[in-house]
Image 1 (cartoon, rainbow, N blue to C red):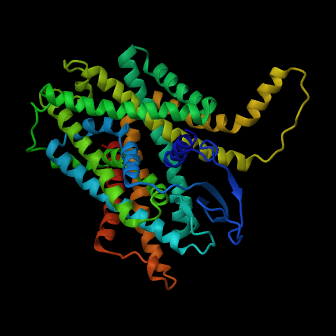
Image 2 (image 1 turned 180 degrees about the horizontal axis):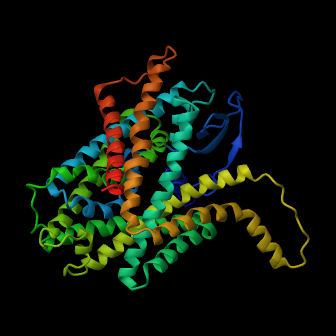
Length: 482
């Protein structure tokens, strides 16, 4: 039993590293070590920060499986983005939106394969002396910094900050809509209660409680999605299915939300370490792991847009699903929607709070003044605050502005998903990877293994990503100046 428990904890560490957990939250310890030391321990993974090759994070290494990697990608891909898709794609119709979804999936697949190839290439270029059983996990920010220089790392950081805030605004806004529908509470109060619950869970509950809640939410969410799609088909969800026609002119407006719904690329560095930098196995995992969510989303789209064909009013297809008279389906859709928002919020809030916490700790180097207190309760409260003040402050810095924007901006969910998908994710996972690959070729350093071929496909995905950003700019400008 002890061995099984240890293995399960190792899997939790590796899985949740890709979901935004901090080193301390995963029960890991960051420590200094010299790469030239002959006393390197075996069976370790070394996670490097940007440009600090003498500080590593060591976690127990256990060779991963393709099945485990596929499960990681599926769990990451299915989230709140699926809720925004039907409303955005209904004006275009099922055929154009399905073709565009498949195109975006292929585009993101190439970008993901490019990211893992760059990551593995950087692993081989590292001139650090580690034992044969050690691996390095290089973050996307570090990848940008090492290939593009300081400006690349800075661009990745700024983009990540915008992505974090826009994602949190989207989640808060959508949670208010769903809870208001279920309970009749005002949306602003619903958003506050929902965000407060997860804030307390993460800030006070700690890693163990957050992990348990997140696992149950994820399993329940995926189970509900499968049940909804099966029941919808059984109860006639295909009755309004029309795969012909559509308005192809509305397709550009759907691209940001499709990117938002399909992205899983923050897992790329973790997958490389999990599968021992074995490119063939990584490629299979990325292909299959991204294909399953695509099929689930296509079925979801067909059911939701099929329902919208029954009404002459322009309405959110997810709202129509919430009003159908299929036994238990409306409640299941509401529960699935809330779970999708909750699981997405946990990952974003954790990763973003870790980023800000590190920033706070770096800026605050004033030593604390210890006062003698007679009350043990006061001592306990003081010690708890000293230990958790950075985490609580970072979380508050994220949640408070997000709630202010989500409660004051109309249709904040739709606007935030457009910004996150059209700008932040496209820049971070669409524009930067081809640029990093190009830079790696410019720095060949005489090593053939470091080179990534600049093929027409690589140039094509880079131009496609830039096109999405430019199109989003035009969309926003036309909205501001109709």
